[in-house]
Every structure is written in structure tokens, then in C-alpha cells.
Length: 463
Ligand code: URP
Ligand code: ZN
Ligand code: ZN
Ligand code: ZN
View 1 (cartoon, rainbow, N blue to C red):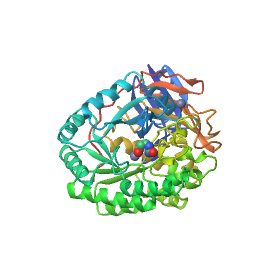
View 2 (view 1 turned 90 degrees about the vertical axis):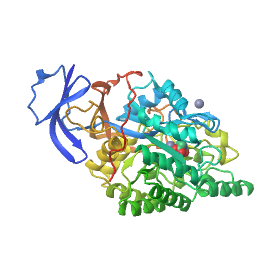
View 3 (view 1 turned 60 degrees about the vertical axis):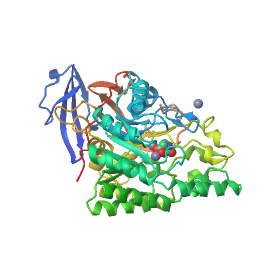
View 4 (view 1 turned 180 degrees about the vertical axis):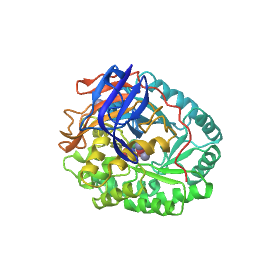
């Protein structure tokens, strides 16, 4: 089965050029000057005139059916990967979650069971390490051999996922020895829990308190500490869901010194703010995620960080909880609101909006949303680029189409949109996953079960 995508503008991390793309089976066979391939070279011809042709998005931070606060994030691997495909994302890297007292390998088995045969697009795993002990440290080696080459740790959530500085140091030493990457949730959870307890004791229980008790200074402090621990151990460090100018300054300083420190931000920190968390009538619960939404001025710094590559990746941290039931768990105490927001479907569109607004170049759009995540997490050049031999994960994107984001039309399995009513210029038109058209103007034509597990190499982005 050969598909020719002709007349489009092919985008990469280095720019844009008029080119035709020939797909043969699951991979890209050739990229050539327009008109080089005759229509009869292919079984199907897709006319991409006036459209961008870009590598499928890679969302390196999702949580499908994740256990949290006594409930589970509401998208399954089936619904979440289908929504991702609708939005031009053709790979996710989801987090397997080690529960305390369990092993990494049994956790990995469990996550394979959840995802296997249920994904519409390809997927990989990171491992959340929440119980550091000799067995866990040894098992990190087996995870790397099994293609799970990155480990998330938490400086937040004491008693749940939290690790002490000593535990982090031990895991970082193992990461250094195995060439793997430590991903850090950098917020000072010990201090935050005290501030949160004080707020509740004083009768301040509404959702905005979630933001007010997690000040940006405590993200900056934890980011600083994680960077220093990484320096002492020599482990590569990737700061997840960076939200605050204070944290960005720490990352920029370390990168300025040549340390292997990288960071991602998420669309919610670029577009939403603590004003959303402060919406009346418990509406703010829709926006409870950690780190919290910040004051608007942080957004200016984050966009600049994306331009300078102090922020190298945009991921969603997709972790949806329904407003009408799950978020209500915290109706009387913001600490019980499940943390997380939906977003896997809208990352490519929201960042394209950054291109429209003049915040990002087209090349940086592709680089932060596809090419760098592929290199950061050992998937390049199979993913993240339109080049001969790469998987034919391709998005045909109409930069002039307009759409309004809404829970009425999105495909994520959650009862609200964090961007309800937001007007976007640009829209995904067609999506190929390993050569198969999974989204087109006719609708979704993929199937859950098409997506395959991706065994990942080590980070390909080190200094
Ligand atoms: O609030 C969030 N971010 N929920 C998902 C878990 C995490 O910390 O990434
Ligand atoms: Zn986190
Ligand atoms: Zn997350
Ligand atoms: Zn529900």
C-alpha cells in the first residue's frame, strides 16, 4: 500500500520546504521535489496543497487510567490515544506508576496489560519510581533493557509518590550508571503540605487555595535542588511540567553551564492562569493540577524559554478527571481534588496558535512537539521527522482552518474542556499512523489495537 502526499509544505525542526512524500507500507519511502512522483506511483494520493505536512506529534507526558487520590484518570488507553490521534499526536509516552511496596517489573507488566491491544497510536512508557530500595534500584537496569529508559520521581506528594533527597540521589546514581534519564516533579511537597494544612485550618478550602499554597518559589527551590543533585551524581535530568519563571531561571542557569538539564512545559501553563483556578462556584476545580496554574506574567517567560530552548519540549501532562463526579471529591477540601487536567487532543493546535501569535516559529513548533521529544526519549529517527526510513506518522495540517475548542466536540473522555470556547486558527485534517490513515475529513478510521509498544533507546539529546 503506497500513499503519495503531494503539493504540501513539509515541515521539520529546521524549516519548511515544498515537497512530496511517498509512503510505502508503514514507513516513509522518499521525500522529493514536488512532481517527482507520478500519481500512479501510489495507491492513494492525498492533495496537501495549502497545507503543512509535519511529523506526527509526540506527547511525552500522559496519564491514561492513572490511579490518583482514590480514583482513576478518566481516559483509558483506548479513548485517550484516539483523542490524541484526532489532535495530530501519533505517539504518547505514558507513565507506569509504581505503588509503594510493589516492584518496577510487576508495574511494567501491569501497564503493558492495560495498553496492549488498546491503543490507536504507538506508545511507550516512563516508570514512576515511588519506592526506592535495593530491588527497585536493581530493577531500573531491567527497565532500561526493556525499553523504558526514563524514570519519574517526585519531590511533591509526601506519603504517596514523594522521595527524599537521599532516595533521589540513589536513583540518580543508577540513572547515571545505566545512561537513563531522571524526570523530576519539582515542587517542595513538604513545605506545600504545611501551607495547605494551614489554609484548611483557617477555613480556606476552595480550589484557588491549591494555587496559593503551592507558590512558584517552591517550584524554583525544588528545581534548584534537583539540578544540584543531578550535578553531583552526573545523571541527565528532565524537569517535567515546568510552570514558573523561578524554575525556568534555574534550568537556564544550569544549561548555561553545559549541564545535561532539560525541561518541558505544557499548554495549560502557556494559556491558562490562576484566575481560572479562582473561578467561582467550584469551577476552579477544573483547573487543579500540579504545579498549579500561575499568574499570567509567567507565560511571557515560558514562551521565551520555548524560543531559547531552555524549554525543549511541550507535553500535555494529560490527566483528566470529570468535573461532575471526580473533581467533586474535593468539594469541601481542595486537597482532595484529583490533580490533573485534560489536554492530549489540543497540544498541536494550541502550540500552532503560538505560531499564529508570533511567539514561535514553525520550525520550533515541530521541534518542541515532535522532533525533540523523539530525541529526548530515544525514538529518533523512527519518530519525530519526515525522512526516508522513518515511520510514516504524518499530519496534514490546515493552517487557515478555524475551530472552537469545546467539550461538545472534543474526543477526550471527560465532561469539560479547559479551553471551552477558545477559538483556534489551524486544524488537523489528516493523520497517518505508520502509513495508515487514522483521521481524515471523513472522521476517525483508525482502530484501538493498531498502536504498538515502542521500546525506547537512551536519551539522544545529551550535550
Ligand atoms: O496534576 C498533575 N500534574 N497530575 C498528574 C500527575 C503529575 O504530577 O504529573
Ligand atoms: Zn508531576
Ligand atoms: Zn504528569
Ligand atoms: Zn466519571
